[in-house]
Amino acid sequence: MAEKIRITTPFTEEQSRKLKAGDSVLITGTIISARDAAHKAMTEALARGEKLPVDWTNQIVYYLGPTPAKPGDPIGSCGPTTSGRMDAYTPKMLDQGIKGMIGKGSREPAVVEAMKKHGVTYFAAVGGAAALIAKSVKKYEVLAYPELGPEAVARLTVEDFPAIVVIDSEGNNFYEIGQAPYRKL
Amino acid sequence: MRTIQVEKIVEEVAQMCKEAAYYLPEDVYQALKRGRETEKSPVGCDVLDQIIRNAEIAKSEDRPICQDTGMAIIFLEVGQDLHIEGGGLNDAINQGVAKGYTEGYLRKSVVAEPLFNRKNTQNNTPAVIYTKMVEGDKLKIQLAPKGFGSENKSGIKMLVPADGVEGVKKAVLEIILHASCNPCPPMVVGVGIGGTMDQAAYLSKRALLRPTNVRNEHPDYAKLEAELLTLINKTGIGPQLGGTTSALAVNVEWGATHIAGLPVAVTICCHAMRHSERIL
Ligand code: SF4
Image (cartoon, rainbow over all chains, first blue to last red; front, side, top):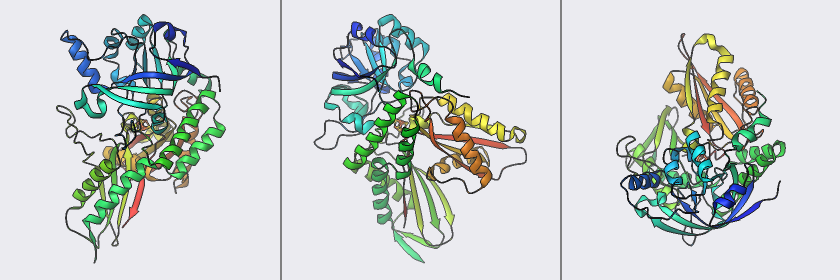
């Protein structure tokens, strides 16, 4: 297994542009969770000309809806959800300064175009590795939309959060690159 | 006539929800380990290591394997000589699901109405309940919580008899290729062949109750399972980021059908292939 690259947040465009599809990374710092309902609420707020409850400049968004935390734990199981459901909102969100996204699964071409424009990296966390990923989360603080429960926007303080670059800022897609050598149909 | 109290059913179902969410079945765990031994892609090996480690942590610490603890799918076999006392059977199942998901710190992922309002019911009910009457005086309960990352990639094709075995393989492969990396592979694939459209779908779900290391009793279908598995493992999908371990098993169930039809349904399940079972 190749060496893992350590990343600390804030995650700048300069950091993002250095990463290549297929790189394994460990993220330390803070990332911000948001999924379906929060994306809908935020893009609606933008359409109304309102300011967002979170400053997304140089942030990494994590598509997540965790299980409830057991007493004494910062968070429950917290693996990635399917990113594709956020695609309709993503170009607008990238205009807000997001430089990294963590989720699972493929993205629409419009998202990849917006990523190239803003120098954004899309990471995959291992789908279903939710108890393992929870080990890297040290703190969970709700920042906005608490009424959304597990879908609230929250800041996660993480140490060595494991992820893999699937689409880099140039649009190289590791889902395709990674599958091609093993496709024997 | 044997009598069983609904309280007992509520308790058992609550327990089953927690067990299923925390403990990956041994056969699936072993299949993952075998996949890790044969996996050709280095990134695929990294992913499988994480998935295996995850299952071990979940089991030893009583934590959900995945944050999507699913919609509770329940298969009941009710003995016709059994009397259930103290309330309705479906109510008891739903009470058990609500209790288990709340006590077990599982995620509540069910909305009451699908299109206009989509309000979360806050206790993961209602469950999807299939009930079959059988001989005897026992109650068999099987629970298969289903995550929707993989459910959303499931599908059905209404083939015609002339499509034959090759047509079935092609239909399954199309659904799998369309699903690609999205349903958290390595997948476990349930295939339902025959019946009507709805029954084929039901069979494809039921197929997932069978352990991954048990093949269909009918030799032709057992052979088809093996051939489909080989085919799926040649797609390159692998454990999410490419490789040779795209699926751990293909389980086929079949049923009688009409002279003009050949329905084929595919339920895709992720590596978090959870279930639990009780005979009361
Ligand atoms: S598809 Fe399965 S492993 Fe993936 S997020 Fe859903 S429930 Fe979890």
